[in-house]
Length: 399
Image (cartoon, rainbow, N blue to C red; front, side, top):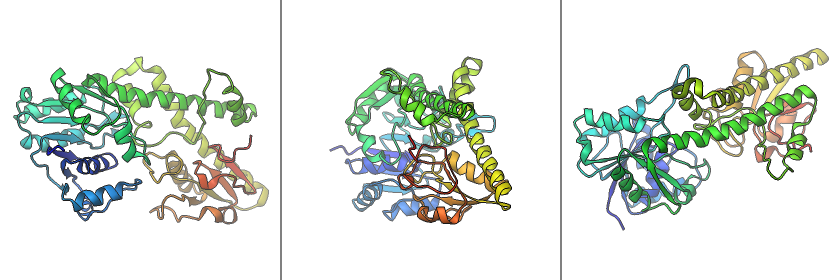
């Protein structure tokens, strides 16, 4: 069992599960987060995010003294940067958190250390990490800097951290080998070696591929509405072809990856990234299209019944059966409707409270609302019906 020490910067949806897993695999882990409440919560053996089994991993790691959290880094053998990489207005990638994290660890990086960027990043960010360390006085010729993008699904993170294949790319062949050796110490999947720039592009490519396929389904749904065709029946029939596999349309695309990562390619690729840009725009537009469809339904109701209806937004999460609201198109729909004067009640069975909405139990929604707008295909919604309903996610399975 290894005695290596790992410093993980960023204790969010990726950093904390990674820290807890490593701490339970024999590593000594020093976790770092700038939010003091997060640090205190973890040091109490508790968690601040919702993820199956994570609480058990964290509790065991803290009790065994293998995991400690702090607001500043410490010396270690391996440094993992797992901080957010959002974008500025205009979809310009924002790597400020990565740079700040790199500057924070620089005083603690020593000869032979491995520095790994796990944050999903624009191509060239790993080189920026190496350059930032160099400018801070670190002899980067004596350390190893690499990129290993996370590839986990919320709700299954603790399992997929171990089982999924990982792509590792260093700024040098030696860095690639050193980082790959580290991951092979706890990953059961294959550890695939490449360059840092290819590893960065691989993650962006995976999510852009998914975004493009979702965009095709979302565009089909809008076309079928125009042509008065049942899109769910259409897709079911088309998928009978042995080489066709159309995805289900939805309210848009959310989450911290698919809704963000394609813009990293578009920003750098400019006019060459035509299809990726268009796919992103289609999925963004689909959410606005949903808002307009609900507003039109509400206006027709008011015309027919002489009063403004109450609309139940069925689901706020960015995908079915999770509590994650990051970049959620369903949440954006509910917020936009409320801002535009529509009477809205929110239904999200995976969270207990929300600062903007009073949550209604899903079973009571048909009595509380005049229109049910199904935005997320949560399992609780299967088979539900109301007097007037809009199904944007196929949860009613009418075919």
